Image (cartoon, rainbow, N blue to C red; front, side, top):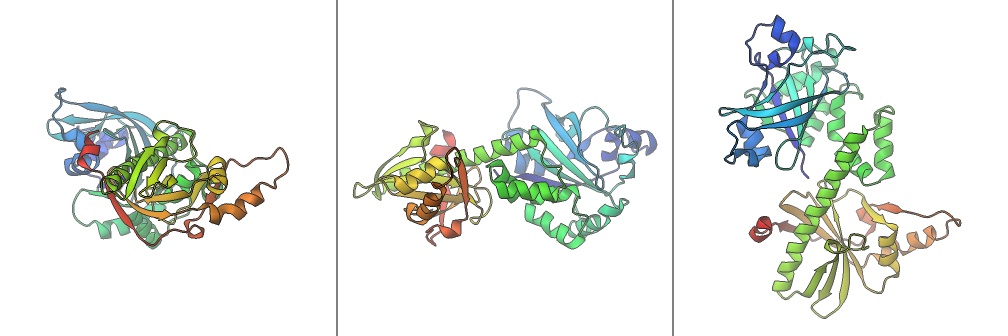
Length: 373
C-alpha cells in the first residue's frame, strides 16, 4: 500500500520531548511533538477524525528513531494521542542512548524530522529520521529541505521527492534516508526476489533488514496483493454486467493454494486462468511466479493470463494485461526442468518486458458497494 510519509520542521517546544533539551533549552513543558491535524488525520489516517467514545484517544506505537547523521535505529515505545483538538507524539521523555550520550543534543529549532507511519486504520509504528543542520553529513540534506520547504511546519512527502533531495545533497551512502527510497528493492526482497535482497545487503554493508521490519514488509506486500484482487474482482463484475465475459470465479478467495487467482469464462464460453500480480510501484517492477504457476501457465489446458496491477492504492490501480503467457515462458520452463534430481525451483522473477503485455492501460477504481463490503 502507499507509504505514509511526512516531513516536519521541529520547533523549540517539540525539542522538549528530549530529556537534554527539556533541562537545558527551557522552551516550555510540552514534552511532545505536535502533529499537524491536516496531515495526520486529513491525509494519512482519516479514521482518527471520526467521533470517538474516548474523550482523549491514544494509540501506542512502536517508535524507531534514526539520525541525526548516520546514527542507527533507536527503538522506543511511545504513543500518539489527542489533547483537546491537537494530536501529539507523546509519552516519556526521550533520553540519549547509553552508547551515544550526546546523540540528540545537536538538534535545534528548524531541524527536520522525516516520518514514515505504518498502520491501516490507526498508526501502529512510526519511523523518524532526524536531519540536523549542525551534523556535517546532514548539512546538505538540511539545506535542500529548507530550500524546498521554506514555509509551513508539516508536509506530506513522496518517495521521489526524497530521492531528488538525496540526488542534490549526496550524503554518504550509509545515510539512513537512502533506506526510504529503496521501496522497489524492499518489495522485491519481501516477495522472495534474490535481486532485491542482494541489492539491500550490498548497499547496507551487510546490515540487511531487521526481522520485524522484514515481516512488516511481507505483510504490506500481502495486503497489496489482497487490494489488487479486490479491485480485479470489481473489474470482472463490471465486465460480466456489460456482457463482455459470461462469468468468473474468484478462485484464490476459496482456495489459497490455487496456482491462479480467477477463473474467467469468456463471452464465447472459453475458460481462461487469470493471475493477478500487484505492486504499489511502477509497471516495470519484476513479476514473481511460483513454480506451480509456471507449470500451469505452460502445460495447463487453459490459456493463462497475467493481469499486472500497478500503482495500487486502497481504492485504485492501473492495469495492463498479458494473455496466454505460457508461450513466452515455455523455454524457461523447459530449461528449469533439466536441473539435477533433488533440486527444485520454488519461484522465478520475470521482467514484464519479456511477456506479451498489451499497451492498453486500464484505470481501476473501487466502487461504492465494494467500499462498504
